[in-house]
Length: 191
Image 1 (cartoon, rainbow, N blue to C red):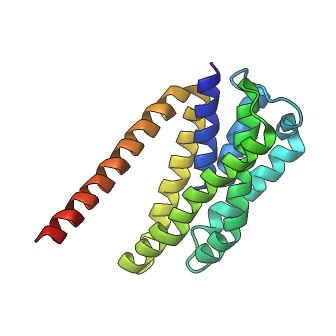
Image 2 (image 1 turned 30 degrees about the horizontal axis):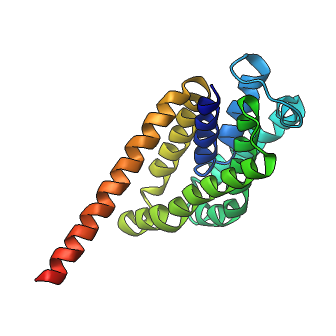
């Protein structure tokens, strides 16, 4: 069961890299209204109505800011600090539910995972979408990111084994891509 808790933590922190507030809101609501996740202190503060209200307000602000041209890029700059922090909180809160991982390690792992996902999104994906579509593709991509963040967050808590399978598939795909690049590079040097 401890291993599944780790997959939950990884899934939540990765989805925080796409949208900082969706995974926190899902964790807070599931912890408040179900037994799917029971948060230990101090993370149980997420189930406070005040905290839930603040998360909802921040989620709405991010939702609309991410859909407005030019503002979405400013939002990504601001979120460079917020998304990794949200990923750190999501990882630490969910990892501590099942496992006894040290909080500093949990926070660091969540920070790195969410920060990595956010960096790929903000530095590579979004600029490419903006450049290739003249900005017209940003709204659909933003909506897709929000949907993916919500689905991964929910599945991370309800069915963490799916996150494990996704992790294996993505890792295998990346290894395959890197292998192909290395093979092409070595073949081009031979010619």
